[in-house]
Amino acid sequence: MATRQAVLGMERASFYYGSAKIFADVSFLLDDARTALVGENGAGKSTVLKCLAGALELNAGQVIRSRGLRIGSVPQDVPAGLAERPVREVLHRSLERIGQGDDWWRLDVLLDEIGVEPDTLDKRFGALSGGWQRLLLIAAAARLEEPDILILDEPTNHLDLANINTLERWLTVDFAVPMLIVSHDREILERVTERTLFLRSDGMHAFKTRFSVAREELLRRDATAAARARVEEKEIKRLEQAAARYKVWAVKNPDLNKRKAAVETRIARIEAERTQTYVSRERRLELGDGDIDAKVALRLADLEVKAPDGRKLMAIDRLGANGAGKSTLLSAIAARYDPEREHYDGQAAVRFNPSCRLVYFDQSMRDLPLTATIFDHVLSAEGVSEKEAIRMLAQAGFAFARIREPIGVLSHGERARLVFLRMKLLRPNFYLLDEPTNHLDIEGQEDLEEQLERSDVSCLFVSHDRFFTRTAATRFLEIRKGRLIEIDDPDAFFDAQS
Image (tube, rainbow, N blue to C red; front, side, top):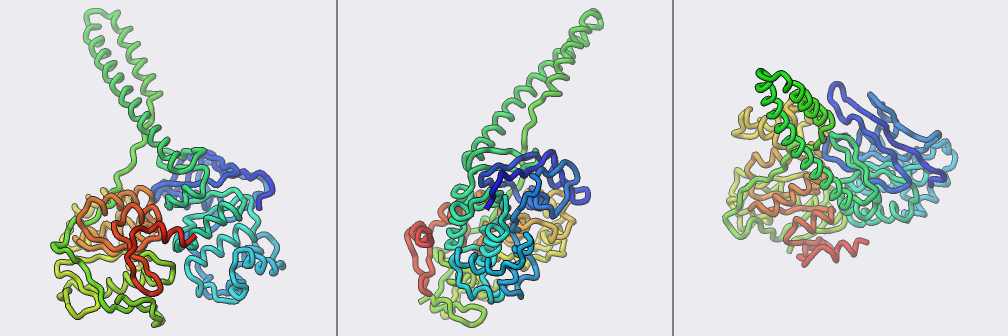
């Protein structure tokens, strides 16, 4: 727990990967609140966190930090090399970071505080669910490392609703320490954070309010600046026309050159003080617009869903807690789809409408060819020309200068946008989406919500994003005791997970 005022921030900071600008002229100072850092995919949020934690060095400007400041930091991905190590050793790393490696007893105290069985310490870290791996790393950083400030990058990734509720309680009640949290989870932003930072190409914008109020104020500022810029542009054009007239008249009356010079001085002053406006880059996230000419796109009957180890998860005779089989159900459905076969087999457990064109979004995005270029991946879609690939990548927010880069250099959010673009090119009318908002920025989530509402495509999705689920879904299925049950709305399920 922080025992003194933590001072951490940046002053006129810039960071480049080679010649590529990640962010520039960024300034902010954190206070003792829980602060959200929000920005579009690829804006440099994770890079800002790494610079604050000392993992990366700025190209210009400076990191401001109080002497002896202790930072607890948890990245959005579980560090490599931990899976085969015992939980005890993984947690012990936090004690070693602060020079208290002999205090092994504190591990037992930590597990008791967070309600985890003591024998968990002897389990292999990789044997835990992805959600509990993240929770334990967060608890270790917040408790064992005794930080003055806690930095968390996408802390809700891979957490189910019960674990998200646990995390909310930790961050708001149990862990009384200043925080900087990067998240695209709108519900978490509203429930947990008290201050908001927006990282954009025009710098950092700070607000002493929660995300929703801060965002409205930022949009108002942008609208006011745009209106002021239009007035200035109109005035500049009027003065330029006046200066042109004086120039013509001064041929016969040289005294008018003074008026011409005065007008030009006014134009220069307005130009020098011209209002800077922010124009967001075009970044469309679009779904295919095909529909299915039938009332039924998919039927399931007598389908058993099993875990990789053969354990039965459910029987069909999506909401659900982790381990209930939601993702496994989607992958089982996707595995039975073959566009070369007749889909509507009356005897099959999974029966597709013959006109169904299915695509599957896997939350791990494991099928992305990370060494292939962004351009080649889009070009590989049937019927896409080079010109079309360049145009569609630009519309999706991929700058021309970057499309020859390997997919592996993209942020997780940018990879998700690329997956959606590639799926659209397959002209689907049925989407299976497994945690589609995990890595999308807030604008991308809103695009996806709008597309699902406006398009005629059918969609079956799994999500622990409460805001997205309420907004995008029109029917709700819960996996309860191994059975798939339709429910009226998700809120009772959300409340039960608390």
